[in-house]
Every structure is written in C-alpha cells, then in structure tokens.
Image (tube, rainbow, N blue to C red; front, top):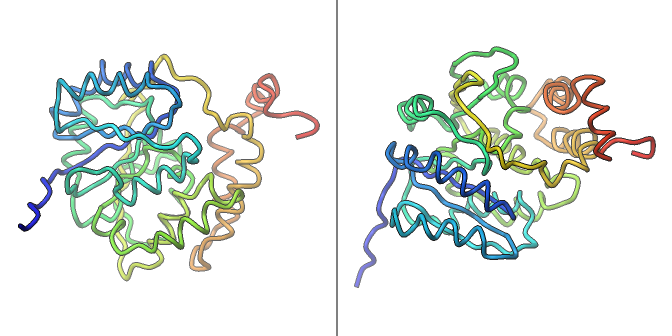
Amino acid sequence: MERSPKESGRLAVCIPTYMRSRVVWDFLERAAKMYLDAGIDLYYYDSSPDDETEEVVQSWMRRFPNRIFYIRVPEDVHPNMKVYKIFQLDGIQKQYDFIWVCNDAIRFTEAAISRIMSSLDSRYDLIEVNARDVEQLGTRVYEDRNVYFKDCAWELSLFGAAILNTGAMLEGVDWVFYEEKYRKSELINFSHVSFYFNRFAEMEHFRALHLSFSSWEFSSSIYKSQPGWYRDAAYIYCESWISTLEDLPECYKWKAEVIKKCGKYSMLRNVKDFRALRREGAFSLGI
C-alpha cells in the first residue's frame, strides 16, 4: 500500500527549550491561540531532564490535536545542534512551506503575525523578522548576498530572526558535513548563522526579505531568565563570533565590520553593559 502524503501547512514555529516550563506555559496561555488562528503550527523541542515542560505542552496538545507537537531531545544535545535537527525536519509532521525556529520566550502581536503570514512568499529564500532594527534598515528586499551579510548577519544570530523557505534552504543539504564541522567548540554557538550564509553562497540566485518591526510589536515572557550561555558572553562574542565569520566563504566581504556589530548592538554596547557582566561574573580581570 502506498504511503499517504503528509498534510501540508504554510508555517511551523519550532521552539527549542530546556528547563523553562513556566516560560512555555506563559507563551501557550498568552499567545498560542493567536498563532494557531493565523494558521501556524507549534513544535516544542525539549531537552529537559524532567517532565514538567512535556506535561504543559501535552495539555495543550489535547486541546489542539494535530496543531501543537512535542519532541523529546536528549539532554546532552547542544542547543545549536538541536536547531540543526529542526532544519533536518526531525519530528515535523506535515509538509511546510516555511520553518521558523524561535526563542521560547518571545511572542509577537496579532498584527505582527498577520503581517508575517502575508509576507510568506516562495520567491524568498529567507524572511528576516527584525523586531528592533537598531540600524533602521526598514522593510526591504535583498538580492545581493554580500550586502545582506554586511547589514543583517549579526541580527541573524538570534533564534527567531530567520524564517526559512523549506525547499530553497533545507532540501539537498549535506547534513553530515554541517554537523561534523559546526559542532566544533569555536563554531557551534553560531552554527545557524554559518548554515545560512554557506547556503546562500551555494545559490545561483539569492533573495531575502527583511521585515522591520517596532519594539512594541513583540514581547518576552516575564518568566524568562538569563540564557545558559550568559556567563560565557566574552568568549561567545569575542572569540566564537569571530571564528564563525572568518570561517565563512571568501565571497563575503566586510567581515571586520560585521564582527563588531554583534557586541556593539547587543551585550557589549557601553560601560554599563560591562559593569552588568562583571556583577554577574561574566566579565572579570581573568576573563
């Protein structure tokens, strides 16, 4: 008997999470119905050692069968390798046009979600959701991968910044190569960025949509705690980010300029940031 084809869907939001059941509960209570009504399915990739997150998600799966999904991931899998598994469509139950890996704490307004859904177009290899647009790039289309690298590579370091065209970005990928190369310690933290720009370099034609949003169009859970990598911020921004960009194909220019942006616009912006890092033990004389 022939296998029946998978159901199809427009967009799947895939959410890696670890030991943050309250954050997951908060999103589901406050935003899940809005996402589902817009036609978005939700997938949770959970590597928690306990069952609290699974129980929260399962309760919503019973309310919305075949729209919310739970995938258990081994606890020792690095978050970025978890993302690579999502890119390989592990656990995905339908055929989606686009895959959106998101941080577990962020949620967008109904108007923002509506705008994102109306922007899904197969002509775009990637749709970038920029919820702060600190450089005021505005909503625009990029067809030069090098200019896109200069303007947007640093923002794509965030989980939630990139919606991927499944056909253009995720089919025909040599995942053995990517997993072996980018699980190295100096490259793993930004392996998703490495993936995007290596894929762009392989394409004959490139097209990305940069969507600019205002800060009030998204919010973060009140239960969000500092990310697990926070105490390694100096290594991540001053070593790992540099290694990631230097490793990219030579077709990308402006690497020195892009290297500075990730810290400049995020956690290393000013003296106040360094003092905060010092208070938290992420910055010291030894570091």
